Length: 211
Ligand code: PCA
Image 1 (cartoon, rainbow, N blue to C red):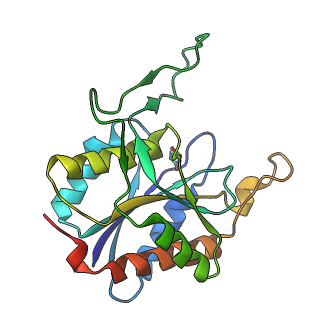
Image 2 (image 1 turned 90 degrees about the vertical axis):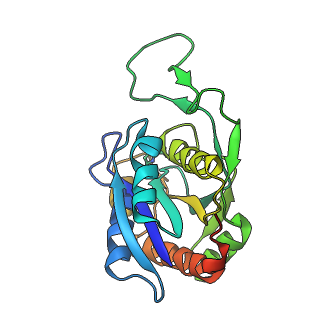
């Protein structure tokens, strides 16, 4: 299985993003039977359709797994759905009705499910000893955008690819200095969890890739 594994650059004043570290480490020592190509994306709108989808097509990968940081989470969160909403947090537009929001794809479907069996995947990660849950919201920022954008891209071309998204907790060094009780998870544990996820994707087999 040839997997495109993506993470994100640090954002929101952080100097590290767990997804970037996990992607790097897993690409260095991938699980047997998986060829892992790492790609670290900038945290800005438009990156899903503008950068990630073309990179996937260029490499003609069998599968895509996106990773990103979700600081409030206590476990690896296997995302069920991407919705057609983008809230531009980077905007400094100080409006009474909150930050401006827009559709990711104008007149696009309201949402797309991940093309992964999310419960089985979360169970598989948990069985490897790493806390994992199914999440019903990937938020309304760039991680949600790339999940939506990739499924839209596959839908337009009627392709089935094992593809989905996992949110990762903060690393311990990120939680330090934040509000007491801010959850975090050591990097080795996060890597073990994503390794289990990649192994699970591999067991889905090449037969799950359909054009
Ligand atoms: N997390 C953000 C964007 C990049 C990242 O790592 C999110 O959850 O949308």
